[in-house]
Image (cartoon, rainbow, N blue to C red; front, top):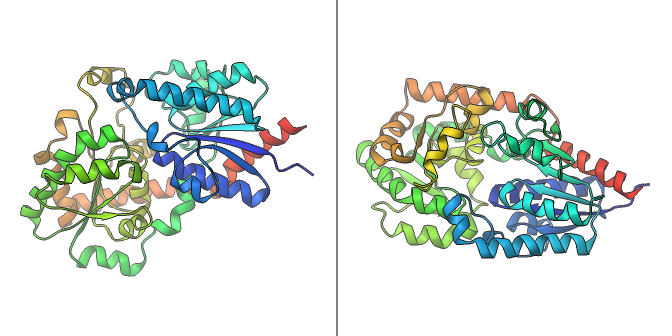
Length: 385
């Protein structure tokens, strides 16, 4: 009989926290006595993880925010790597956030070369910095990919072993799927507009002003709106501070209240990221916006895909409109959202596209978290022999 084992998990942001929690639950279903250590947020804490430090300490992205917090980030990388070496787990699972987690992995590989290291969620090597794939072979034993085209991308680029396990959001499908009554309410009740400005402080800072003006413009064009903004705890203070300048204040929702809002929303204004897949699974038409620091924008020429929106990438076509940098301005965003709120051909076309996203993601059948847990247990059992 295999011993329970000890898994060290490192998540770097809110979406990774959810994936980590689902993976912990799936692992515990197979091995009730399994032990966990690591870095995570509230969702992983509810599954029993005592995080080394708050997730908000490292949930940053982009050149300027990283440089601003560099001393803290370097200390957290060092602390995490030392904790892994000292606690001697049987397996290390990195969850997304490669700018942080891969630096940890490189240090751990030097100190404990025999420790199995899995990377849950592939970096976007197929879109940005493809050379990372080959470099990862030095410190990653296997990538657990959430998008179906990623194993082929790693083979093409000379990356480590890569297995498609499916996107763990599918394990939340029941919570995201609207009932017949909720679908009817989308069309008949006062329109519910979801506003999701991101889970990182830099995202919130760049998008909140434009999002606030967009909401005000939509209310003037479309009449009374119910506007709701789900809040990730580590950016709650930033959001509260920036709402002071909004002409129309939204209802703030906890993460527990978010699925019900997704089931009833008529449309959404959202920062590019994992939330776009959640909205796709819930069948909520959306407009996507994103901004980076001006110093980073010239680097867009190095991106090798036509879209940065996950539902578009899953389908290989643009079904969701995206507005980047200067194009992410209130007038353009409001003009794109208005037909999604009012209904008609544009709304119907996007709803049809999102239904195809859902079908494609469901094609693999089995629980993605269970499949990921299976890969972790194979490595764990191999390490314990």
